Length: 434
Image 1 (cartoon, rainbow, N blue to C red):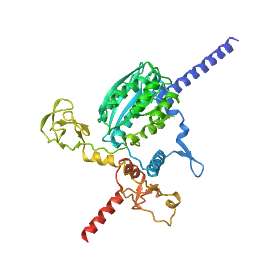
Image 2 (image 1 turned 90 degrees about the vertical axis):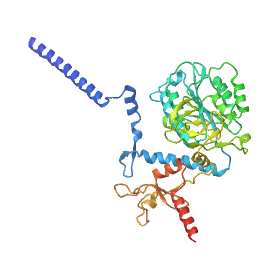
Image 3 (image 1 turned 45 degrees about the vertical axis):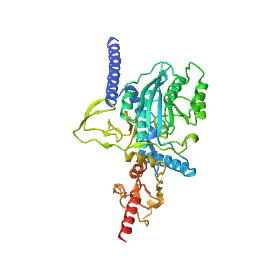
Image 4 (image 1 turned 60 degrees about the vertical axis):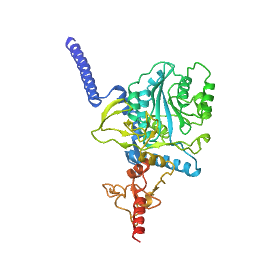
């Protein structure tokens, strides 16, 4: 009896020890698989993993071609903008003064956006600022934050993306409530000083579900409407009546982001210049200076930072003051300083590039149809390693074929079609010979 009980106890302890060893092995394996990742990163990596798979023609699962999906989304956005611009001819505001209002109240610390709303906002604002100045080189941006019921101006209106991004990354702290009225009052005071040719805009990234205001916000909204300030709001939580009312009264747009990719798309929709308000859609003559680049090795005092610099900067053609970068406004005489490429890039919004035509899969898979071997832009092969034709597009004017990467580059960088340019150059050369 003693021996059998002793054996049963030993067997029970052995099974328990085996289970503990197996559990430790599983924990070690999980730690190895998720080494270097925090808990929220592992959850985010495993969340909705089925969305990265799709079914092919034979019924087998394969990974999604993110490049093709991104190109399809880009083409849809490009065609919608093109149809809107060709359907009705309207004037666009090329010199924009935009304030970005960032809600850093306690609602921005919510983790429905991984790792938090604040972190996602900071990342996407950086992308938007660079894209904004790439498409609007003559415009300026300022940053305003809301927290603890107070609106604070983080950066003044300026044309340097690096200074705005650096200032924002150093102030990422969430606390208190959000006050929409205080933010509108602050940006109204700044934008009222903008000249008549400047287009006044406010983009509010709102995380809270309420606003803590010291007075009547309806009066503030009417004041912004009277000052021709276009206010747009992108919400991160849910639709709010006061934000929708603000956008309707001032002629802006209101939308709510579903996830991080949707937030990026909504932000980038504000990068191209919007239609001008009727009262601003008049001709204005603006004095601009085209400064010369300073010679290498010359030491001079920069009027922007008020310190001596060597061989970096530009000289104002009116007062001969030194500035660091373009475009900007001379601190001495107030002349707007730009370069000719900046002016040319701004004019591209008035004469947009015609979207290229997609080639249907039936044509690309037809063996009797002669397909090009290389892209006209980058000269890369239009066939994949399996010698199957890759998706490509065709210019409707010159009928040259381009790969997807060149299609995105030509339209996003606001360049002319290389095929049309080469045809135009060859035609002018032939005319000269004749």
